[in-house]
Image (cartoon, rainbow, N blue to C red; front, top):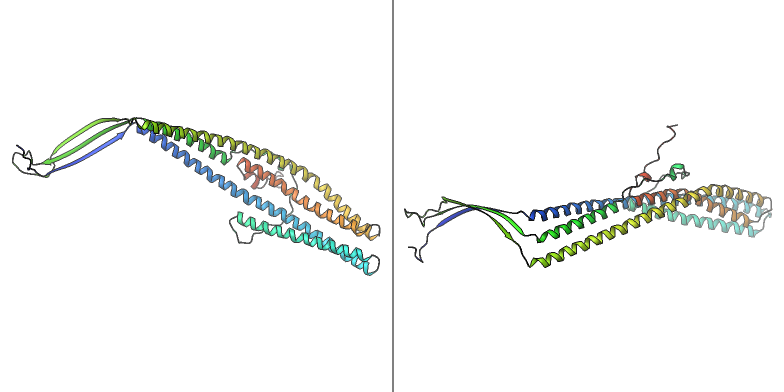
Length: 359
């Protein structure tokens, strides 16, 4: 018989495996949620790329508009300088009073001040464009060219695109719904399929009395284990409710974003319509302002006008020249706003197609 203080050495080697069959459903739901969150992150990256591209394009158009204003200011300075030289010559010949020369010089100083301010705005525009391009501190310039006149293609409706912000919101709603499904599956019972295989070695029951340590007696077992934590019910229900609330929040945010995008599209289209109408009026206003300035110059030389009428005509011409150049660029900026709201800047950044057949 075995004694209390008796003993023998032994050995055991085993391999066991278990698989939670019902837990597979929960893990599949969690994987689906993770994939949707990855899709949401990719959409967020596209949103950021859209914002960066829009900032660069808008800064470019702003700098182009500021350059046009600088050109108009320089032309106004040249006209004021030429007129001041003429008035100075007439004053020396005692054909005009000294008050005319003082007023002409004051108008020239005012024109030069406007030029300095427009050049300052253009310099700040260059800084903003460099920052938008990721080249802060580097000198950035754009090619000087006259703004293009509005064409029928400028008013062509832009095709609707899928805004990446809306894609991100849709992915967020889907991910929240997947998380809610995964939370609902947390309270399923654990149904585990288990199996084990082991080999033991012992000298306790060896008739020869040898105490061998080498495993030589195999055995196996297989079974089904079911567990269901009853007290976990309350925590599982709370997690399900939280996931459902998050889903509701995501859906509300998605609806709010959809309203905001539609409002942006409507506002941008209204801006484009106004810019087109302004651009159609500025050529006639520019021609009239040029004719008025020329007539004022001629009548002043003939002694029919004072220096006040000439100064007023020159200021009006400078203002209309600036508005004409800016109005054409305002059309492009309005189209850029529409492209941004629709989520695709390609129609606004790509050059227009040649409809003349290369002639």
